Length: 198
Image 1: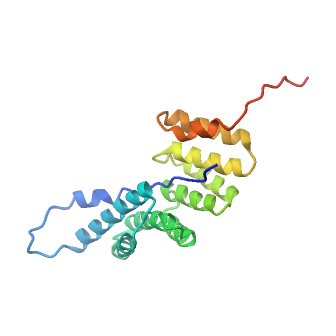
Image 2: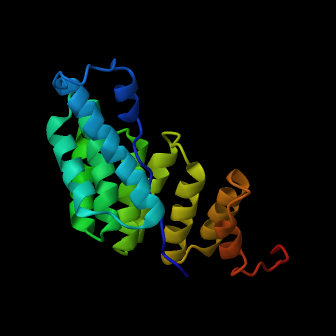
Image 3: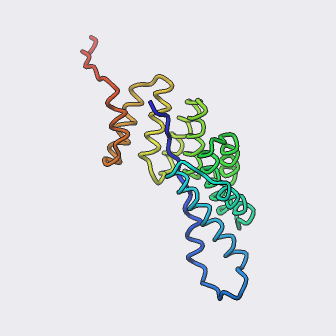
């Protein structure tokens, strides 16, 4: 079974750039424009890393700069979460976990960071901690619940909870019927009808 898990990214920082008017080319960008542009680039790099499975040194350096330039706690939490995606992609799980922890200290209800922390725990073979994070993330209505159910299925399967794993694969499939991976995982299970015990 593949232990490929899916991370979410924080896209809120992208909207900051669109709210700032364009400046003349001869003027220097303001700190807020620079901060939002760097955060925007970090979010885009996180999405690209998630799709490609590769995170460049330049993308990581950009996200590190975005963390330094972040204006306000919300922006800082989003950038930390996005940088954690890059670190996760690079296999730097402890550093990714540190970024998630920092983001969650700022906003402990950030569903994307909770999902990402669960994904990190999953690849570190800490299935109970992963499942607990996925449970918590689902309570905050994450952007892609099908991915959370899929990841929780992996954690439950790792813990030996075959019924729970199957139920979560089925829920992921129901929520995203065009996504084939949950269906493929479900084919590995055998359902057995049992008579009720009297």
